[in-house]
Amino acid sequence: MAQSDTVPIWQRLTWLAFCYTFGVFNWFLYLGLALQSGTFFKKDTEQDRLRFAISRDQFWNLSKQPLPGFEHAFFKLRSGLKLHYITNRSKKEKGNGRGNLFVFLHGFPDSSMVWRHCMQEPAIPMHSARLVCLDLPNYGGSDTFKEPDTSVLEAVTEFIIATREQHEDAASDEHKDFSTVIVAHDWGCVIGYRLAAEAPQLADRFVLSNGPHIGLSLANKDRVLASSSKIFKQFKEHPKTNFGCLAKSYHAIKPLLVQLLMFGYIFAFHLPSFMVKYLGTGGNKAFFRGCLHLAHGKHEDEWKQQESLAATLGPGPNELATKTANGESYGDSIHERAASVGVLFWHITAYYRNGLATNHWEKSLETIADLYNLESEAESSASASVSPVRRRSSSSASSGLWVEQYNGSLKVPSTILWGERDRAVGKAICLDGIGDYLARGSEVVMLPQTAHWAPVEKESRAAIAKVISVYAATGPGDELPVYVTKEVDSVYPGSVSLMKK
Image (cartoon, rainbow, N blue to C red; front, top):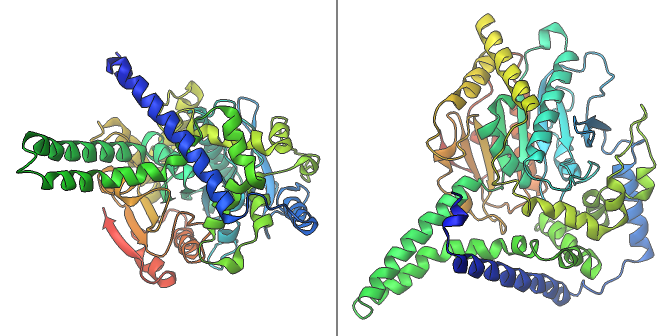
């Protein structure tokens, strides 16, 4: 019997009423903040519209380079839908398979262009590694999934496997042995956790920043509730003698209440579609502008509103008419998003409504076969050579045969770079205890001056670029470095290694 069936109907109705009421409260709260800041009624000037059009053309015109050294490309899924990505290596270039492969996954409300600052850091290995920044389904230039549930995991897995094969096919014999690293932020991080737990054959290492591990977050929620409830019961039994337990009970549950307030936007995204769409469009896209302004933190000199909006909203009608040099174009399903910011906002917030983070992933037969082939190739390579990379891939994948101690335990070594000042994903609920879920060879590095958008903020993006450069410097068959705090500290003084496993 499903767990929801064991819960009394009155409790379920009470919870639904709370969710709806809290969602409406946050909906008005965000619009109220836009009114208070004075941005709600602010209109774009002609110069603003021109800057937005220029930036949108720069990022999304398929006939142009979106970033220096990068080009647009598409991957067609088995379903017929297309994923858009940018890469520093042409698919037609001979011998372009040298070096390690890095796949970047963005979060909400961003696109592949959120990595544009990071990709221009001096430490980024433009010539010694292949860099691939993917637009997740419903975002940027990728097609729209009407119900983006675990089908997103299927699509990302299919894309990564195909990209690995393409990279290997393009490599010369001496470069056939390479490492694959997945770098992810926010929703990309949530997806990364699931891939590292449920499809460990995909990569040799994950670099994750500021996104919740859902299993850990739910476990922390239950722990906090149980602790607070136990203390409160002592107060109820003897209110006079145990009056101090009331304050202790509040302090025990406070981290959960704070995280609930932080996650208020999620409840707003579950409101009726006309309210969600208006949240994205109201006040001249005030919600988008607020998120993007927070991403730049204290670096006001770098905050370019129109450029950031163009990078986030994806291609417009003019860009949809463009093609790459080899004739590739955007998918048909993007036209609806390009014509309406409200529709775009409804589709990108669908990740919060369709169970991508929590639903059971029933892998397709094609995905199972592809992952099995990756595992078999890793085992064959490990037995034929002394390559520690292939040996690690094989052992990581095979570890899936063992019973997990914790739901969602990762089976691939991971480096977590966490911005301590995050106002969307709190440390107490979403990070504390993560060591129980990590594979051996993992590390958690705290970035004290960084908030949520680690790929954007100046100090933290330099740290991410440094980590990427360290992993890119390993040669064919060499084992990836395990701990990188020392390298991070060289560009981010004050960074702290919270744990090594």
